[in-house]
Image (tube, rainbow, N blue to C red):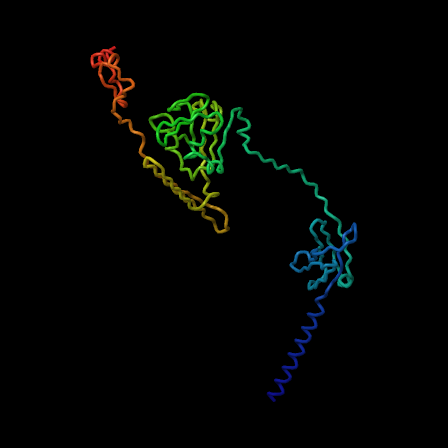
Length: 337
């Protein structure tokens, strides 16, 4: 009795699954067709055919033909799209519309775009509006300079006079005002005035950045008060450092020469990214060390060429001692006067 009931139950289950399978087959239906160019009749390869509002779709083959399995019940809308062509839609209202073959001719989409001009220049618009002469030393020129430092290389630019006040102290002058204290010139480091406190002028590059961190140097020969203020009377030396976003990594620099000269520097920059992989934060660290033995005025030997008893009452004229050419009484009288 139990066995008979089990067999009857299995037959009913089998019948139910068979009917469900055939119902599913009857619902799904394949549609086919071809997509052609409206002007020349050529097949459109890789065009998209989809049911609007769903993820059900396909693409055309090399002959422009397609075959799409439809599981949705009408009414529905078929969408035909292709790059450079106008998208077309076709409404399917009854199941009989799915049985026919589709022959779709698509026309090109005409989009009138505005003209785009790309203009590049070596100088900025701000520099073009400036009537003065601007000499620039870029990153390549800094590396290839024949001078011991990039700052001394500025002396090779047009309209520049360079004076070496001491070892490592190079003074840049413009407009013919040659002096060891260029109080009329303005020197900027990333837009900040880097003149030495108490001296009222820039002492070479002592208060500037290291050579490995300099990206560009702009030298403006002439008065630039409208752009940089009243201190820019003789000219402007504008130093720009490297952006850590564009120049990350570690850089080392070592240099040695006579008179116990040693210079060393390092630069480290790093960029941090966010979760999306975009640059978010960056920093850089610079360190430099310079050591040298400057020229010392300690020669007390007699300057025999100027030692004449008739004019030198002191009887001795040292090379690096000044004011010993006159008698003590004469020096006191001159000082009182």
